[in-house]
Length: 200
Ligand code: GRF
Image 1 (cartoon, rainbow, N blue to C red):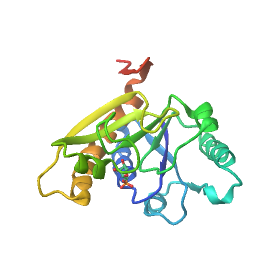
Image 2 (image 1 turned 90 degrees about the vertical axis):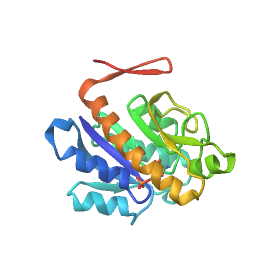
Image 3 (image 1 turned 45 degrees about the vertical axis):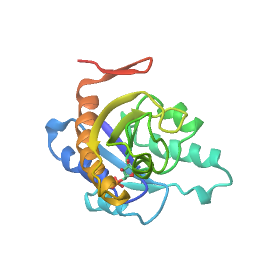
Image 4 (image 1 turned 60 degrees about the vertical axis):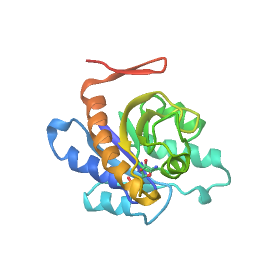
């Protein structure tokens, strides 16, 4: 399967996908990496792996809709079977969903439907939950609301701060992302109302 990955930052999830896709049995080829920010480490990881990159910055557009349409078009140029938002910190919009809906997944560092939004680990700590985790979901028009493909649970330790908790989550999140995206590519999947089932 052809996979386009979108990043906004460090790109450790991207790196895990790049490492996994080196083996042909994995079933995915990362064909391009895009970002909404120039100069992020995720783009450097792609360049080091010899993968084409592109940047669509919101500030180069008069409004969000034209940014979203340009992003959708840039992604479409690579004819992806799957689009993976891996630490992509912006909400995609209507044009993006019209072009890539149903084959775009995002990863969120909390157990949905708890703690949606930008601060999953911080909000889980503030609430005092003893277990949190990560969620891979099909992107829809909401914030971290789409049909869930996979989840992994991660314990909260009493001496955690936001950074230590997020780091523990990210270890589990990367493994889940690699496993699940590989399965989606190799087996196919159907979205049945809110349930995502693998086709085999
Ligand atoms: C991940 O935890 C992702 O879920 C969150 O930001 C982190 C991105 O990490 N939204 P990286 O850029 O893949 O290292």
